[in-house]
Length: 319
Image (cartoon, one colour):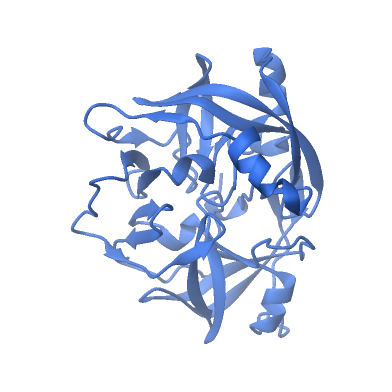
């Protein structure tokens, strides 16, 4: 699998009506009980798919081994409809929600209560949306029929060691950043982390999305606003998204700045506009942190990353 061939974006899940937000978060979508080992962290866990930049990990759902994608851009956890059917799960509830992917297609989902384990971490009573994840859940994607989203991550610190393809979950209380990382200024976009970046001098607010692989992915509207649709060469391609595959063109930005790091010749994926209020206009993916250590504290909000040794990430030869 070529690293740049896969741009994953699991759809944000939103209330079908504005008045359903409180009912959804505090009644239907009750928080799981999160139990960590006595040391307060899971220790390092290897990526289940080491060829991919996006973090995956071995997990169990109600005792059955599965692969999970850790997605800081997904509002809620998700179980693929086929896995739900295979497991014969019965603790199902109705959701006043609609899920959207980058392609803009909507799915109306139900929810189910799961017991999930990742290493020594236990998520008891985790509520997850039942959705068709399409190729993402199959071998042509990440073979990951389970998504752990912001509903889990906002209670933990996610530590990613990209060079070693491993991750660790830690309790937020008492966690201190390792010496080799430094803070990157972030704000909240809902429950997600959002950072200001510059694309050839133009500022863009982008969601930090561990479920996306491209250095930067933007809507066509955003690409136009920052001057990326100025007639420069583009490469057509496809991206795996919620429920299927959509077109995503790729262009090269001469400069792209994230925090204090300057990326030169950075490949930027451009996807079609999504007419959904609150849908992010830009996503910072894992290629932006290739070869680096990254720590996300969604509950902070805080983001830390080590310095890159080489941040020239584009080039005609690809990777």
